[in-house]
Amino acid sequence: MATFGDIERAFADLYEYRFIIGAVFIIAFAAALYVAYRLGWHLFIMRHKAPFIIGGTPVAIVALFLAWSLASPLFTNVTVEEEFPFALNATVPEGMERTDVEMVMAGMAMVDAPVMEEAMPSGLSITAGTMLGSGMDVASMGVDGGAAVMEGMMAAATGEVTQVTTGAFKDADAFHQGSGQAIIFTAPGGGHLLRLENLDVTNGPALHVILSPHADPTRGNEVKLPGYADLGPLKGNRGNQNYTIPADVDISAIKSVVIYCKPFSVVFSVATLGT
View 1: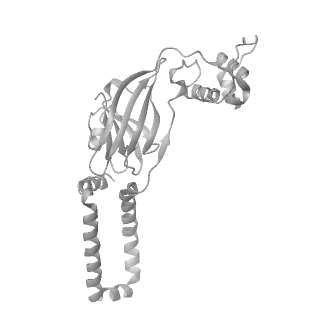
View 2: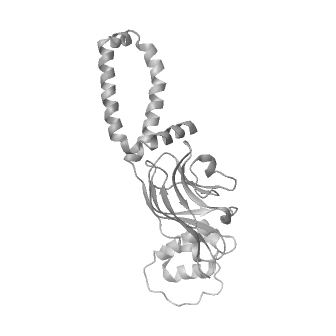
View 3: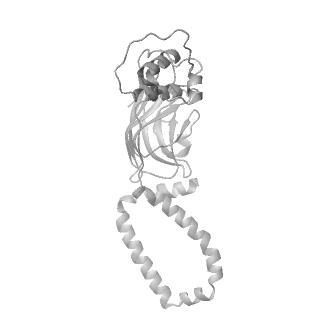
């Protein structure tokens, strides 16, 4: 599949001339069909339909796949809008994950009522695991009940979220284009988050978000240097999105954020960090 990526890169510089090339191709194709018809090739094909169908079907499938992969970015876009995580500035209690805290805080944000000061009843003990495991709806519990659960299951927010580094996305070539910001944050209690803001990148097949030790990679072998991290599929080629960075990733060694097409090994856009 990487070979197809090499072909795509080879034609990327010709992208700005696509309309001229397309017109020439259509004219040449029409001329070829006319010559074939004059020579009677259509009669030969009609007499040998079976071999042409058997041999032409796999060729047609590959051609259609390549055509879709290369042409789909021209008319498909996916926009994903995610808020900055509620829980990034909170202390995560023992036995919980930050995603669990995020669920609870998001639920509490839905409660639209004045806050009431009330001491937690003695003997009330609700753990995060109990609440989440039972499927309790925090938003439906009301302010009093929700506040009690929040007090019993998690500590108050401490410290501030710190921006570690940032970078601006740029075009990889005339066809693969990108803009927006890549920002890495660290939470007070540990853990890192990548946030993509105002992202607008050319769409493509199986795009992934990669943290790379290379500052400005242009090919797959540069993207996947030792220490790189694949944060998973790109949620959308437009919008604002959050990606959790695994704890074993050495943030100090990461030099760029790459929007990368895995099957074709093609770089779509790069944000060099610290610029």
